Image (cartoon, rainbow over all chains, first blue to last red):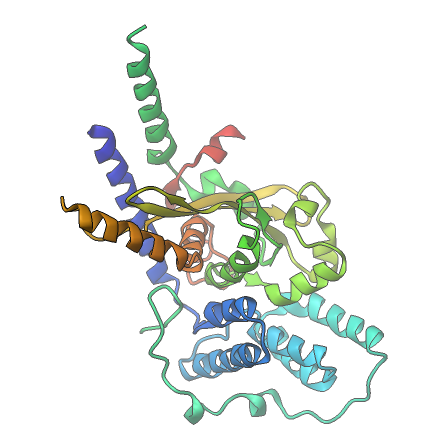
Length: 156
Length: 228
């Protein structure tokens, strides 16, 4: 009996501890990042990939809209997708955006570009639009009603 | 002879009490985090100790987001795993006892996060079933190789739901309902919760508003912190 009580007290404490920290951690907007990524793993189709890319751009747009720093890795991930497609100039733009926000990213984006240039045999550069131009326009972003607690919604 | 069971129960109760109720500050438990001040983290492919072969694939999609929220620069998992994969590394275990300097050199990461999936399973009982996700996270310095931080999170979910009642027919309905909800049970939301639990014990990183202000925050001491 007392063991049961103790056990439930512990569970309660754990829930409280978990709930307490989840609320103060919302200094980024991550949207549906984890969900679209999970969908890509579960069902690796071009459609799911496209949805994930769209979500990355949505995160950038929403973060700017809400005056939040774009979360680590979002620009870099978009850059990497362009890099794999051989679009070096776009990749470089996104990596530079990542570097500006997070100087910690400089080493690996520099290395990635170097590796890609080696393996892709230095494809010719073409003029890329500035990073901002690639982002989904704000008016095209639909409010996402599917967001659940603990998935990174920012409420002021 | 008769006293043994009582002693055993007491011992278990003490173990539970000792394991969960004692607290310490983040700085007391993880002094190296405050001394070395890592800024950037690379997440390694999970180490799978569960019986589910597909657990790492799905679990790995749940780590980056909560880790980002702790305030560190997190290298995008999609990129770092690709690179590691090309080097033949698909499982964090391969690197666990290795020098980690290459992560500093090539990735610019100050620390490396190992994740271990301890449990990822569903226990089938006659009228109930539970889903358990247990993960253990460990941060090691890529410069010194020292363990900077570790914590685990466990989520147990009762999948059966509903009331029992005395009607034998309702029992059958319940068994069927349990089987159905077990078949469609999705581990990922619970894996996210387990990660949030574990990572709530991590000292905040440089991009968190409470960076360097959380040394006195109290957290529960877990078994892995006592063994040393």
